[in-house]
Image (cartoon, rainbow, N blue to C red; front, side, top):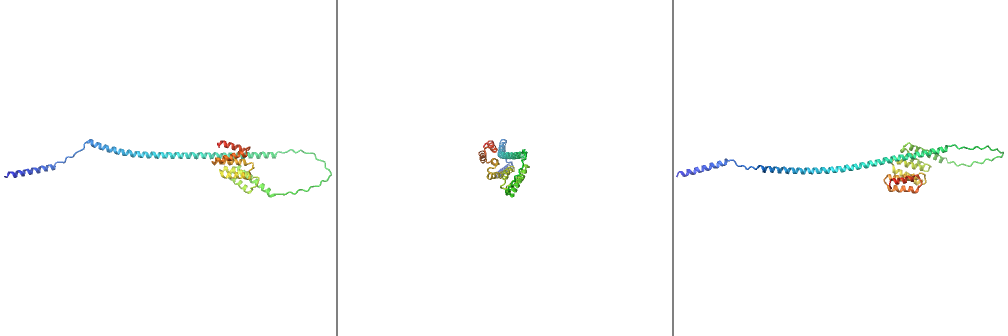
Amino acid sequence: MMTRPIALIAFVLAASTASISCANDPIPVVEASPGVAGKAVEQQRQLQGGLQAKQQGSQLADMLYQQQQLQQEVQQLRGIVEEQAHEIKRMREEQRDRYLDLDRRITLLNQSSSNQSAVTAKPVAVKKEAPKAQTSVAVKPKPEPAVTKKPVQADASADAKEAYQVAFSLVRNKQYAEASAAFDQLIKDYPDSHYTGNSYYWLGEVLLVESKQKQALDAFESLLEKYPNHRKAPDAKFKQGKIYLQMGDKAQGKVILQDVLEQYPDSSAAKLAAAEIRDAKL
């Protein structure tokens, strides 16, 4: 009877020993194969490379767009600079032409004055007659006619002439600002003098040299309104047409130049107007 309990005790002890040994054994770890891990790493690298490529592509597109905008702005600036350079060149050429034209007119006027002085100073031969025999007839002296003197007008005319000569000498010396002021003052002081018409014309010429085109137009217009038959009227009309062309109003300039051809067909201004219409292709 004693053998069965002993056998049972031995079985229990054996089972406990087996469970303890199982508990002390290490847990097995399942390791991935090298091929699977490599594929995962490669996929991750490809994903990161794709994201970086997209970012770089977006940045490159932005840079190209900015470059195109800068190129357009540079082209616009170049166009503006070229346009301004052309305008400056045109203004310089017009200014030079005004100086040359004014010098030419002054030279012609000086030559005309010199020729007139030479004609006036030329001596005239006077034929001497033999003295007549005196008779004893008494001649009753005739009373001298009364002479109405106008010293005020004579003095005003002399003063206007002197003022005109002073103003014109300033033009010869190329003191244009002083000359325009002198002509303007002469017109105010002597509005009805013999020199007022010429003063209007030369005032317009000087104002043109000073690039005061609108004021020059007014001076020429005053000459045409107050002295329509003045010898400077054709030139003043031609100058008006040319000023309108320089200001960009080709339509008005053409109308005025055609008026010169119709109103003063035999004048030198008409020849200049025809050449201007032809050169400007109006």
